[in-house]
Length: 599
Ligand SMILES: Nc1ncnc2c1ncn2[C@@H]1O[C@H](COP(=O)(O)OP(=O)(O)OP(=O)(O)O)[C@@H](O)[C@H]1O
Ligand SMILES: [Mg+2]
Image (cartoon, rainbow, N blue to C red; front, top):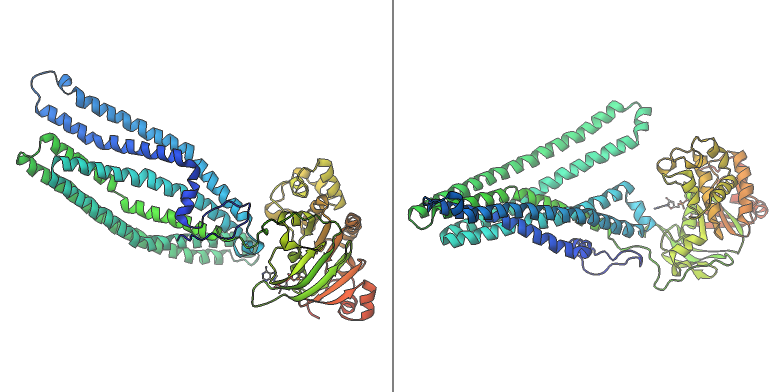
């Protein structure tokens, strides 16, 4: 569970250990004082609890020797002790409650923040491999489980250990045989509880897995509710879910039956201790070896132990579950960061905007390469169109310029500097991308556009919206720029979303601009007007524009035709037409329409 060698991580990410126990200790790092205080308070509480039978013993001994004097006067000391203990228990337990309130939410907040920060530095590939909802769930689950693990140790196991230790010591003081009897019982009981918890763990895990499976099924079905409605499959979906619910029920029952067996053991063991102690103590008293007070105390202590020991199996089980949750979160999130800034990486400042792919070999996995030794130079200020069939590598090409993935071989240089040697932040500040399928934050339109420039004024935002022709539809919305766009922007049409994405990139105004099908969802009239503004916004920037609709890139300085990861044609629109190759065929086939899927 705990791996000790350090893993590759981004310099700005917190130094989280990748082992479960070390991770929990790391989370507690800044709470040392409070932790110690908490342990002291819990000790106080356990001690004041356990001293009660001792005070009762003193009371009983007092009562037994009671002469004719005033009762309260003779029993003053034990009574005071009892009252003091009751008060101490209240104070200790409430003080520890207060510490918990001070520390708990803060611990959870810090764990969440640390995990979230660590997660941010994972690569695009990592986020492609994990579900967003799953990661969010992992973070909150892990943070909660760190808290629960700590409380289980501090507020459950620790006081129980104290209770057991003090009781046994007191009993040994009364009579060695009695003390050893209870000690033996405690030892066997704890051992059995632990073993049973480990045996129960697979059941509990299985049950948790089926619960989360059912959860996943419901999420999937709700996400696809439109499909279910359109295909009139609501009944079908209910039956489908029922099958999983049935499995959940069966596993649940199996788990609970096992727990029930454990409870049989616990009840029998408790009865054995109770009766055993009473019988043993009675014989001792009968033999005149202990006082009546000792007798009461022994029985009182036995009851206290039983009270604490009850549910120990359950507590172990929950403890395993919490630790398992933390381990799971740590395993998922605290992985090495795939792409990190080189040590001493400098910031990139684009001066001319020359882009070069030098001998670039890349594949999403080792077995299949998209590019094999690709070489291409894009001169400063050049506006380049990329065309090619679906899947030919255009989006991959632009994605590599942003260092979303690590190359297998070769280099990508901007102004002669390898992008792998500069900070990713500066690279992303200097290169703008309007992706093929832009998604928006579920925040207001204003915030979404303003994302391009964090301190943008309302005027600047409105100007950018105007440039992207988003202003007319925004103004028709009842809440205007304050309107929320729904998860990933679902409340906007595809074309509206694209225009917001264009506006925020215009506001960002980076020296290198990449458009991946940036206007593909727009009607031809809107596209044409935006195109003019885009052309103006391009200014002296280096521009790379991917398009299926060739009319949108025909006027650019240069066109690269991609086929299967290779650049098969390179030249201006006119040159490529005279070549009578792929581009010519595409152009002639496209009567203002789209590229066919196959040649
Ligand atoms: N994240 C990914 N993981 C694995 N393979 C990928 C990934 N993204 C793309 N691919 C694969 O890489 C190849 C090139 O894809 P790419 O997205 O670059 O094509 P494209 O030219 O942009 O196509 P389109 O015109 O449809 O957008 C395809 O075979 C695709 O299946
Ligand atoms: Mg693409």
